[in-house]
Amino acid sequence: MRRALLVAAALVLTGCGALPDLPPPLPSDFVPSPTISPSNHGPLLSPDGFDAAQRMTVRVRNVGCGFLATGTGFMIDEHTLVTNRHVIEDSSSLEVSTYDGHVIEATAARSTTAADIAIIRVEESLPVAAKLADRDPQVGDAITVIGYPEGGRLTTTSGIVLGAVEDPLNGSVGAVLGTSAQVEPGSSGSPVLNADGEVVGVIYAKNDADQSFMIPISTLQDLLSQESLLIPQQIACGT
Image 1 (cartoon, rainbow, N blue to C red):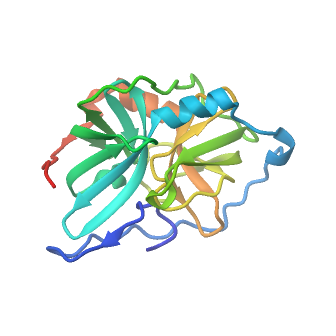
Image 2: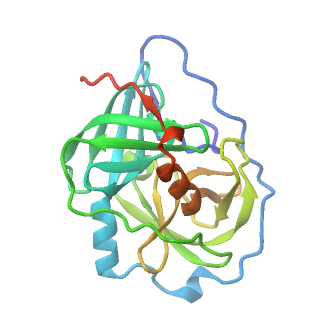
């Protein structure tokens, strides 16, 4: 697996056909200067903030032809969640589960080529949804990433926003944001939270220097407001 792309802790199984090639690695020389240190900022999420974040954040399990992959997603209303397009690509079934192990049926999925974003609809309602920020974070802002690295337990990691850069994978319209938060495969689709617990972006990639990249909230909001950019994706539900 190339470390450049968070393609969800993929386990190659016996199956039909070859897996698609991964995009080229991200550059490792993108090192903007942060304006603050996370250690000077203190804990970002309060206990109440973490409780809400863990309830809105879900594990996404993609069973495809010849592979099994996991990623992360987060609820934006009681039946809708956001994740990465590459987390759900080539799926024959999608399984969503909560931090306490509750499994939810995925009934539909849509994705876009304008950014590495996918929208999943679930049958069962969840009581907690993310609050989306009304602006992108600024350079030096402290952030928290919450997700399921390696498909394991829910974890958080903190960092700061390093700056804007054109998408190194050439998959997004406009700039993406680099951060110092260290993430792992399986963190793809993780929400990036500000100090108020609002979502300010979506993690989708990392580079060889352990910097992560996120799609800013302004891009996500634009996609959500333009449904014509979201293309339905076939899900063949089953075991």
